[in-house]
Image 1 (spheres, helix red, strand yellow):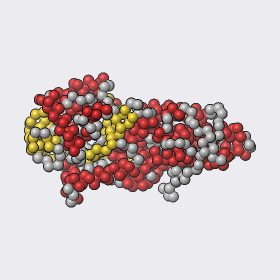
Image 2: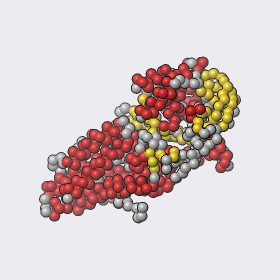
Image 3: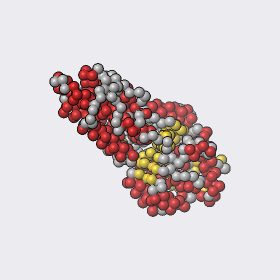
Image 4: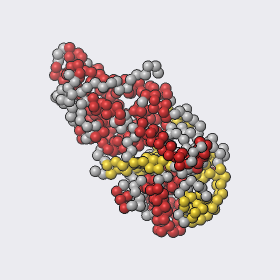
Length: 504
Ligand SMILES: [Zn+2]
């Protein structure tokens, strides 16, 4: 079984998760679930970035110690991810001792292998607390950070440790161009290539006398810069530097937002090269969830709570909407109106109605048992085509096209019911034709229970159970989709899977 080590960005602990965080987590989760279906040994990591300056502020404002604050936030975030059915099998927090050990060891390795990659210097610049980053002129508009137009930049001047990032321009360029280190989608790769072609400046990797953070090895007055610290989480979660870490490292895929590609596609690979470690195989940078055209983040001053969005139509519906409508590549818009429309059309009238009608007819005409169905039908052809289109899309992380392929099969199956009109076949006692139609619907439902799983995992399992199949949909053999083994299974009728809201 090939291993697939997948990570999401770790989140700042300065406020509740919002829809932007949720998009990234459910997108990565859909990828993890798909890779498991394809037989990979998936290791899926999520976690918290707990050393930011914003944490100190948030803790102070709320009367907590930083540690008590981050403990509370870590719990809150993970509760949300559990509610959204994230299937991560590892969770890391940068305040954990194992992380501190990894950070210290990585810096020591750089010192040992490339002693002049780390040096002391004076830094002067404008610091954005929202980004936890010194901003370059191109990243500033109207005197403020492009990402955080409501926050003041802080003029800062101090003695820091520097990392010789400039030395790594060519090796990184080479690895991106050769495809050894994949940056996707292409629009993000091109941005990074341009940035590299323009040349790199060395970066400060410590802050002076910051009480909340990891002490810089060998310098008690300095704290490891939060981004340098945070990126190492992907490595510390593998157990680095303990020998077994190479069973997971290098990571197969880092899923991040488009705003932090410079850290993941330039600084992180440079750090790894300096420490003599392998680069991750791929970074995927998704777009932002927009709310009335503005990036959705707490510091940008917009808010629709994640709790409200989950409560609207349930966690599966939110996952589906984010991945199908907002998308996992470019920026996409979220609105209640559009969410309600999609919910009604695709889930209540689409998948939900198909399941309910098919299982009702099986109950009525065949006591719930899926008959032997003879020759493949047009619905089976559509099923095979959907599986192929789905795999092609999911293999290249085009989650929207993956969902489209599965829901096209939903539409075809609903149409098949109209065209074959099993109730008419029953009335006219055309038993063989009725068997053929009901068996084809059974196979379509089987395929959908598997294909829909990465998007609507909870409902997909209910469908699987209703089909009377053994085990779980998420553990189905991918090869079974060629000829779904449903003949003779005893189906039952579930409660309505996607109830229509009383008034929307
Ligand atoms: Zn910023």
